[in-house]
Image (tube, rainbow, N blue to C red; front, top):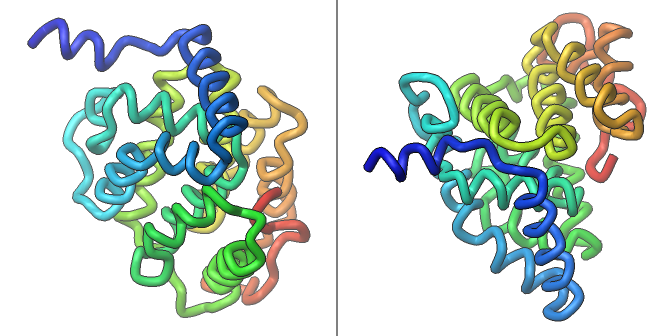
Length: 228
């Protein structure tokens, strides 16, 4: 039991992450992106979605990663770093409930983001979340998603922290939380080319927010879009 707990909370080495990323890239080449990512993320993504809707976990640290195992964490982090469609789908899964963005659709987008129907639907879901003043944050869902992203960050090397930090910055921005800027700046410090973090940083600096926040109804930062 002690060995299992130690294994689950042991930080993941860069070599381990890089090897897993290379495996995913090779699988995408040999099997096609759709089949490879679906197989790679099927179980981790299912646990991610289940955990988003659950009650907040008690305690701190990776062992409380909302039901995500160490293996889930490394696979999600690798997939986010290798495919922006995974990052975008996870972001939407946090800010939009499963009634409007079901997991089956999000998996379809992750595996086939170039499909016009998939990209258009995800863009419409995301835009509606910040243009519709009635779409207020589900704080439990957002807190769960942000906590899982921070749990991932605690376990992985810096290179793999960039996209989770960018997602956190967007979610905090959408919630009207001033800490969004800090997370965006941290992501940019690790990777100055992280465009999602740059967009959030610009929006926070200009005090632009989603429609449900005061005085900014419908004003969204230029460039806030999936695939950024």
